[in-house]
Image 1 (cartoon, one colour):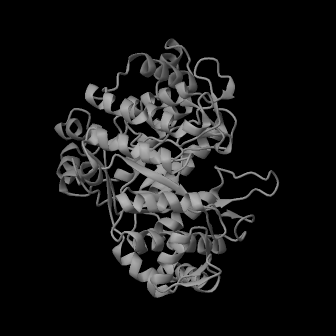
Image 2: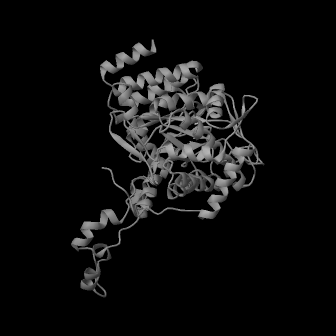
Length: 475
């Protein structure tokens, strides 16, 4: 059911004046420094709209053009399931959680071996994510290394769409031809282009090269999606201290300018097409030359970009439920929990990379199951509490009085499930009961649940006529 949580707490790091400082700095960068646009068609589009173009590549965008394009971008994006039910509403502070994509390695479900990812891992991740109640959308999880690299994205898409009905976020690695096939398959599933446009069940993930390099592949995807009104996320690749200033303020100004530049191209091409603000500004660890997924600066930056996205009335994409640890240990769970809670309290609409380990190189489905429990706890915090005459219970407290108890009261029976969150995997038993049940660890319990899902969960199949149409498109 469609509902709005008016009590959801929202965390703000900056006040309105500080946000203005980042916004105006970004406009200055767009007008003064400009973007390198590696696509002649996009350069012409910008030039005809009033931008300044030098050497058919360097484009300076006036602030009036940014304001104009912000006014046409939709303030909400709605995603359907594969079955056509509208299930995700990217608006205001509504928060959804999902996996990440294209991991080179995985921790094997059975042997715990650290190995290259296979297509079977993409399938398993889709089935598990389809079952987990707190995973709202699905990315590929792994980069299938056992298929032709030129067709990886098609194989991964088909594997996901056959093994979940939940909305997807896709990455495209092999160019426009494969993207066209994926689009045709999607239209076959929904029943035509108009139905897919009205009820898209996937979003395209778009990423460009910072600082200020909008490369041909990224722009090709941006235009492809704009022309067909496919929702697209446009994500900067600012690494503070490497591809951006080491200061958070400088990196935010740079990343914000880059996303706004992409939005201008997108909206000039197709005013009103769905655009999602990419909120990933990452620190660069000078000691390890790594991008630390558990770094507090990453998630603080996402929180500030969430504030900027609300200033622009745009949905936003973020990151959480991930760790730099190489295995599921105390570091992994603490980094996953803090990032999920911080990003959710900041109101990011799409929080991806749940289940990532090893700084975005490796995944674990056991870890994904654990993070599902952490998300349940996070959602309970977002739900907050109601304050009214019933919940204040003044008459009941007066009736029970000093020294009494509330165990047998109708009010307790009515509210105990809403008032207290009950975990599935976190253990609250007394020591004797925990010992009697096998003295299991959190990882033990998660692994048992994972095995049960993989052996028992059945995903609703595609219609046979749709399967035939898909085979025809692929051939």
